[in-house]
Length: 164
Image (cartoon, rainbow, N blue to C red):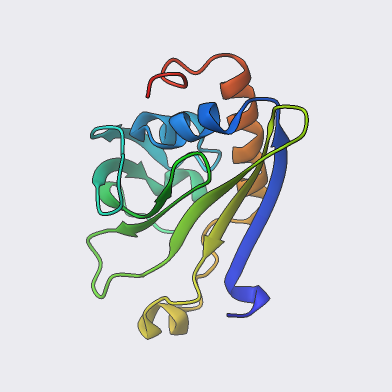
């Protein structure tokens, strides 16, 4: 993997890892913090283990790049370490599947907060998508903005942040 196949951004959040992790395990939490504007709604249960899935209702209009209309994707959890890391692949209607990964790593800080690192990795995408030259779809700025929204959402008391 090279630096041009992965984006990582970090931000300290003044909340314990357990609260941040609870938000990230909730499908609606992903919608609540999305800065891209693509995630419109979600269906599914809070995730508790690798292999679980939930559906996200998408609209790519906010990116202004492809007119896909409204569509659904399935998020499949690939990494789930309580209060430490969560990652997933997005499975959509395109074939072959793209194969990009999104995730968050959480590190407790000395002040009781969390250093949250968001990552977006397209190092293992299908050759067809690599040749299309469309990656990264989400910018570093969008990942940073999402972390800002995550910070604000957790500090304001995300409704399910303490539900475990």
